[in-house]
Length: 355
Image (cartoon, rainbow, N blue to C red; front, side):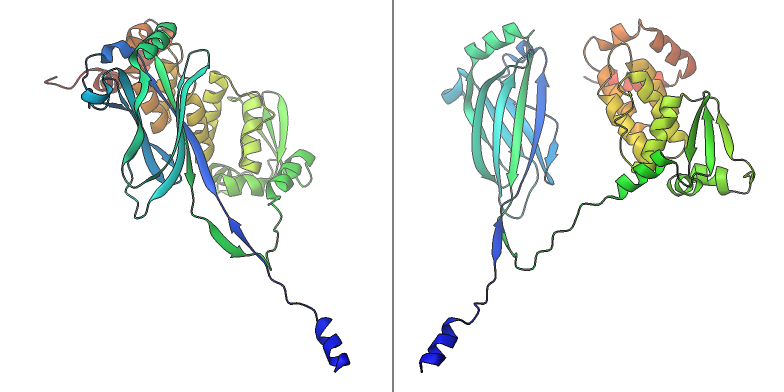
């Protein structure tokens, strides 16, 4: 009996494990309101709204009630709410903050809330006293920016971690970067502005149908191992090659200026690199101002960059902007080269008939 008991005690114990995963997705949206004083007298239950923004597949917007949510309760206050535009089948739990940003970046009146949404809005009927907001507006040229930081909290999930295998991150990009950098196996060279760049025909052809036609099409010159490109800057071609090999934005090139971004968009369009073209569109949208909007609009029109064109037209529709833009050389050039674009500008700027 003693031996049997000892054997039972020393027997290995079967062991398993699991873990609970709590996940979330966070994003922010800034809603700028210019000439806020013009909203005075809107009355209670009247609101202005930001454009919709998406977080974790759900659409949201910010609602501001300059005259308060309900007159009898909130006359001295401005009300602010987060509104859920989507209609989910189950409640969506979120944590969100609303704050006011001053022109120097200072954050004020930050309020936080956790709420489960199901196609409704939630926030603060008494978000800020009108007297305090008036003081803030006096310091910020009658403008305010309401910043919303929104975290969608996903349902907890439990998984069996007994046989979880850790998979290394993909290093494909690293290999292709080294392939371009080391130059091993290159079979074509490009002379761009007197600077030579080496590359691999198969890589170029796989990434660009234009390169494929030039290097392997019926019109190819089989003995030509050096191709001259006269109408492109070396820094632009270097960025183009980097993207072709890595599918990522080049961090080692100075492409933060408007002109360089425009040239790279042209190159991306020329070689059929649609993703790079869209990335350039997005960066150019952030750099639109009075001096650049006309040339950027012309570029967008010539290269069928619809998102960039719409961003330029929206900028031109802002109050007093068009008058200043009309004085620039870029505007005079676009009217001379693309006169039909004036119809698009007028449609965006002019009020609808009957208003």
